[in-house]
Image 1 (cartoon, rainbow over the protein chains, first blue to last red):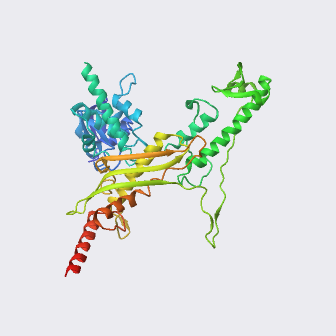
Image 2 (cartoon, one colour):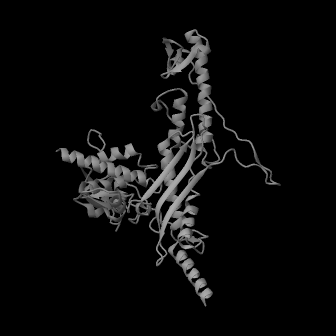
Image 3 (cartoon, each protein chain N blue to C red):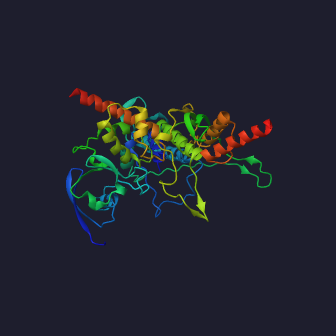
Length: 164
Length: 286
């Protein structure tokens, strides 16, 4: 049980080789070995969404994923949302413009969940946002600006896709 | 901590010398070197620290003017701050930046100090006197829906207002007020610390219910009432929180006649209240 397991995984577009013990979570290895501090632990039991990462494109709670299970897979954290030249993702820009945060501890979780939500949702409504993001807690209570930022980002993404 | 006090301090300092805010840096607290402070409390960081920062910047401004008067060979009264420089009024060519002034006079550092002090207090024997230097004002209105079968309460519409005086950062003030709703709504309806023999049983976000997106009311209005440009800096961090819980519980009473006297207003308490009302009606009819 104390043996270290080697994990080969793509993180934010880069191939990484990590090691972990069988009981380590994805949050542990991403923070400690890759110093990706955008992955935060709020509850450790998959309820708060602060540890959200994209695993093969789907948002998961990193605290519920055992690190050895991501061998060979693809992970995106909030650090991977901006483009190589440093340009922010439209969702990030929208959050900045709406000041959709206070302490910003929950923000990475919201951004990553929004990434797939906006890529898949045909129609982004206030009710739809509320329902979809019930698993991302914001203790500072920035919900209404977060809702506005997500809806606005949805409009921009839809417009950009329509232009192509 | 998220209330934006560092930004507020930087804004005030920048305004005092008409500099762009990115020229201001605010040091972080380091317990090794930062002077001891009692606490950050009473929703008065912006007021107490803000007024002190303005005083300190005022001293620096005065020191800059004195030195500039010398360098520019003008009377202090003929100088003005314009576009981040100290300039002889009406003569744009005779202007110096604060950096120029400090370097050319070999001043090293200019240090300003500001103070904010209050007076008053209550007589320990009579309880009379001056309890505070100013009061904080907020109001709340809530519309709820109560399921009479389950006792479950849903907040449908909330309007909150708070007086913010001279508002340094209006967006931040809105965010704090909205945050107070989320905080108060939880306290009113489902937040509870449960103890068993002195041991906290629900100390994890998984067990301690905080407001999620789905708990927020579909209709929400927040009004931050700003004072005019001469208004004083006013605290708002906590102000809009206390009215939230009474507004919700008063709405529950208006809807059902059930008086909630201890929080949270759980479904069980509401149902218990409804049952007691039914028993009273039955007894009266019998």
